[in-house]
Image (cartoon, rainbow, N blue to C red; front, side, top):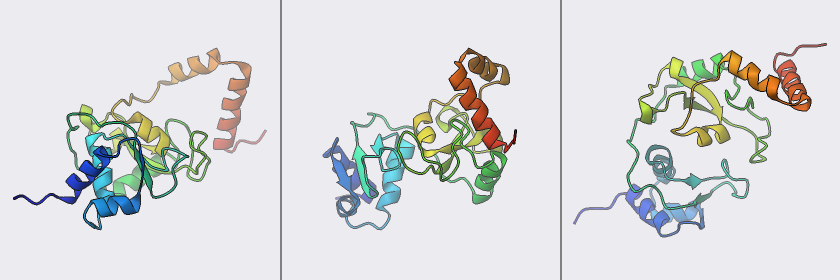
Length: 190
């Protein structure tokens, strides 16, 4: 009889507990005591598209709590190697000024959606599932919220004219907020 691996054990445990908050010790037990149960969980979420939430995604969850909010897709998303070198990661963060390229948060800023401090990740402009490559021109810094929301649906960065059009269409209060944010970002003093 074939031995069931820790990832498959976690998969079966999560499927039996859809919609229930799971503690990390439960996952470790379900995995058969595997030391790498967290890695297997990330593989299910990041490589197979399982909608597993953690405290980074949902302010109601505490560190060490996870929630498979709904049954995952029937067919797995194509599995990719998740490794982006530390050097390439550093180059992306430096180029992007350690700022989320979708919402503008920087590490330590309070994320208005989760109420937690923002953490930056490296995200793809054109997702790997759509043929995007792990190269500098296709990578950008994203906070946890934007990176999770952008999975497999990201579009290219907006053009200057599109961005200016949106700002011009906005109300005066929104325009002032954009101005204040840009002034703070570039440390411009009146």
